[in-house]
Image (tube, rainbow, N blue to C red):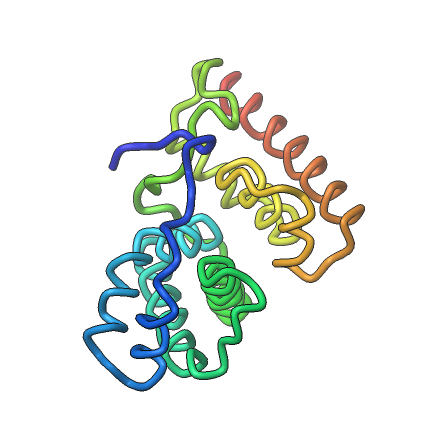
Length: 188
């Protein structure tokens, strides 16, 4: 899979209110269009949190099921893509909590940006994904959201329901732990 530049990553445009209303009313074709538009985003969030293709597919499916069931309650307080991003992140974190294991990455996600973690110093994307998988969950999720997806700290704080200062510390510590793992990998 090709990698992309995190600075270029943007969620797809939100569906129109009419399309959302149709999907919320049970129109399967309207919901199918939502799934097709957002499947890459939802899968990549799950993969970057879980680090495993099969688990990411399951989490993505869970996220879309949650979306389908919750769509009638969606009130446009946030953009649809932000709301779905949060559902996707929650589904992935729930799956990770239930699995209680460290997955082995099967493949490199599309949105992983080699440059975000120092590929210029001779570290390949597979090594970066494995190193991310070794980070504690408390550091991994904010670090991935910041450095892979390029989200602002405030949005990460809202998505993870943590104070802004805590998020900044977690990203800082995640980056430091990642640098140590990548340095050890380069020296090995």
